[in-house]
Length: 113
Length: 111
Image (cartoon, rainbow over all chains, first blue to last red; front, side, top):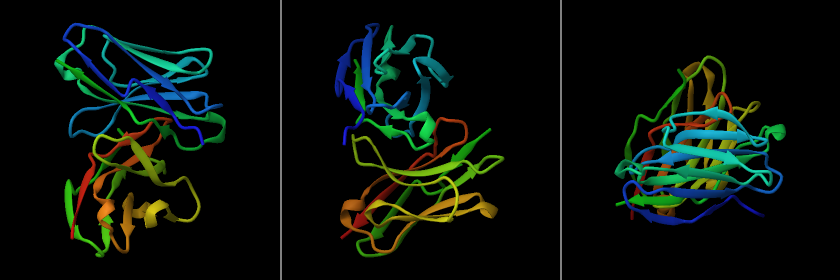
């Protein structure tokens, strides 16, 4: 079965650069979530989208923005990167109407140097 | 505010021994409850979930969890641990459409 696809899997950026992380949800899923997991930390919710509209917002810095496109894929844009942004970024998707759990991608490991 | 507590940061068990990982949550109603497992540098794999109904839920890899409303707990159990179970385990709740994770418990398995 198709799973949540995230790209790239690994990304190295320098401070003050920008990064774009992509997430392709499971086909027919209409909801996408982004989480950030720092080293040795639990995943923290950043933002979510339902039917291309932002549905909830967590501890996402103002330097970050995200959107969900017409094909339901989502992109997390990160600007003015800081060393502290180094983390594993997870995307998850779900089908809102079925009220089931969210399925996670393998994550993108971002390293800021 | 909703929260999830995993009291044990690190647990070591011998292979073949039984396992119980604790999870307590704070929420006014009964949220959706989950256990995820994460191997180093990998994604989150769902072990099991509780939405409603039978309070003892079976998951993958021989894991089970029991929801106890009176104790606001959702402890994960396995009768006999295998070396491949060594990983990080996260309890999570979903009260409002997004997951809130506990701090995680690192499981080490001794041969």
